[in-house]
Image (tube, rainbow over the protein chains, first blue to last red):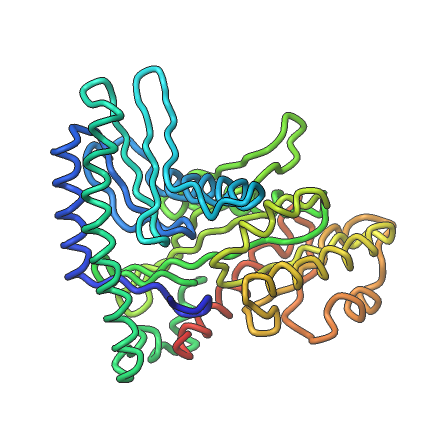
Length: 165
Length: 195
C-alpha cells in the first residue's frame, strides 16, 4: 500500500484497460452511467451518459458517502460496508469498493435491475482489482528505480507564479 | 495525496480549510466561488444544516491553469467546525495535500482556536500525517471586528513555527485569495520535491 504522502499515479495504459472494463460493464449491466472514484474523491474515469452530469461533484459526494459509511461500519465493529445501494423513483445508484481503494459507482434505471448490476459489478470488480494491483506495482517499481520523474520536478517559481496571474 | 493522471495530463490536489465553529471557513470558499471565472470552477457543494451550519463539508473544485502541460486542479474542502462533529472532520482530512487554518481573531474565540488547532494535529496524526510536514497556511480572519486579539498574541499562540500567515476579512474577501494562493504554491513546491 502506498504511504499517505505519495501521489496516486495513473498511466494511459492502465486507464485504457479500466475504461474497457467500465464500458463492458455498462453494456452488460444495461446501466446509464458508470464512474470510478478514488477514495479521496478524485474522479478516475466516467463512461456512459455523462453529458449532463456534474461528475466532479458526484465523485466528491460519493467519496464522502463512502467515508461516512465506513465510519459507521467501524463504530459497530465492521471493517467496511463494501456495497451501498440508493433507490430513487427513476434512477438508482449502486456503489461498491474495489480493491479497498477505489469506488465503483453504477447509475441505472428500470432498463436494468439490482440483481443484474450486482452480478456484473462483481465480475468487473475482480478485473479492476487486478489492474489496480498492477498499477500499484508499476508505481512502486518506478519509484524504486528512480524513474518516477515527477512532471513537476523541473518547474520553476515563475511557472507557479504564472498560474496566479 | 495528489492524483497525477498521465492519461488526461491532469494533477488533482486536496486543500482542507480547518478551524473552530463560525470562524469563516465556508465564507472563504463562498468568496472564492463568487469571484472565480465560471470556466475555472465547478459547482460549490455545501452539506449544511437548515441554519447554514456545515454538517459534513463544503466542496469547491478550482482549475488554476496549466503547468508544463499538466492541468492543475485543486479541490477545496471545509470541515464542520463544531466540536461534536469530530468524526466527520477526521474523514475529510483523508488524502489531504495542504491545510489552511482559519483562526477567529475575536478575543473570546482564542481558546476555541487553540483547541481546534490541537484537534487538527491529533486528527492528522491518526492518519499518519504530521502538520509540520504538510503545506500549511494560517489565516487570521475577522480582522475588521473591534474585539480582536493582537497579531502578536495570535502569532505566538497559533503560529509559533512561522508558517505563511495572512490577515483576512472573509466577508469582504480581504486576504482570501492570498491564503489559497499561498497554500497552492506550497503544495506545488512539495510536488516539485517529488512528493
